[in-house]
Length: 311
Image (cartoon, rainbow, N blue to C red; front, side, top):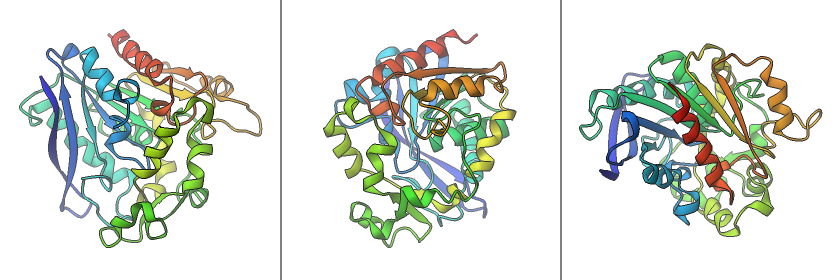
């Protein structure tokens, strides 16, 4: 067993220099069918979205997987946490998808702590889901993809989305991430405090302590990621492995409030466009951050059941 061992993976940047990606590898003994889930957090988070530091029995997907015999690699995506922080405009979705190719290769060839995994699954949240879909379609090197906080189809994401200014502001304007000033350039943004609950949560199904921790440990989003987010989101059409899209019933980012009242209706709308490799699951009474609501374990259970159903 490998219990939350930090690993470092070198990845080539668009300029030919090396980026360093930090990851936390957890491998039960034995790991279910030699499979590794690479966990990709969303914007304004780091790997702790998947391994939440508060009440881990309820909110840590890493811990849930460990107890269920599933190996995970929770990474800090480039630009976040303990990974490299290149110029924000350079840190695009396309560049990160290229970096993921090298991480998947390391997972398969034994470069990660000497273990070679037979199967690799990308599990994303929000922007991490968009990145998972892009990497799966462009690299063709994974066995399955799980989207959370993202339907994949008709996501509404746009390149240089002007709506990002409603949710994010420059890191220099936010005291919570003031420690990053001087370490990152003006291409780095963070979530506005007042946007967190209405955008990410169903307040009555969220613990106040979780909301408090969420604000205190928040991370960044880059202008590079925003610049090609829409293009990256359209990659769903080219994914040729099984895909699960799991969203909260009340995820306001996933349904069109002009014509829909919840994501059940959004799923019904997109199913007609969905190829046969797509499956959908809606989690009741849950917002965008499916991991951080009181019923998080029901989401975890469904993901692992779906993975077990794959041939």
